[in-house]
Image: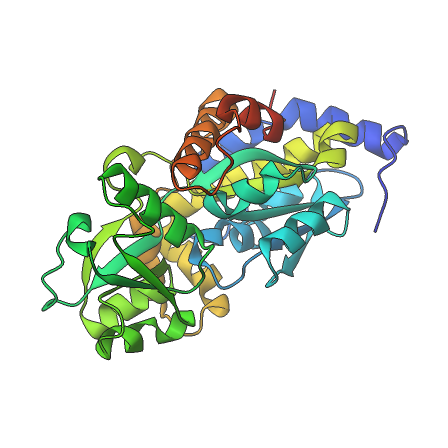
Length: 344
């Protein structure tokens, strides 16, 4: 892996340029972006800094990642980013970031918070967006809201998935014990619809694009999602950066964070174009479907600073209620420890 020399002339020059342009260039580029490729972006002079960014190429919520490559947001910030499609466990991903096999990653807050509690040296620097988790039932089931799930079985793709965690939390807040008053059953994500048809489960929950496609093909009812009630303005997808990179090369961590924020805002403003860019990673869904998914997400909501840190603490509180985090964990202290404000 390429090491970073903070004292080299190229590094010092790049740092000066990044400080000068960290906010103004992004704002200008976004203001003038058209529906086509962003040919008006100003790119950094000199050599680009190489970075490795891990992501789940099959998840539409990570669409800003290929957008940042295709639209030049990374290069605008002086970065040459190599994308790594990571399909392993979250613990393996965070370990890869913490140990320098990757420099950063994009993933789901409700999957990352528990392993971060264990002490991985990864810092959350920004929220990316909200939305993309859905709970479905058949039109004949009689299940029209979350209380209707009491006594039923819910199919999920992973017993530690962010979707399972989220709906367990929301059930708990409604006074329904997610461990004793509902049952959870695991299936491969692409077989969740079949399990519902066979009556093995009465509801299914997962993330886009798979759950959206199942809803459309099987004409299912969307009982709930992660943009309801108090969660309508809560981020679900986050950026995590290697702790040593934050401490030793803050300008690069800042550049990466700002590039993804720029790409996320561009995605919000141009969902059809972002869907077309992402489409090669989701052959099971057409561009029109992907566009509709992105329009339903809250890519305009990408918190940073104290606002983002507060959302981390709120999720930590939530996860304690369902026994995922230790009750002794101080949520505010935890948020302070895992968050890094690289944009100041």
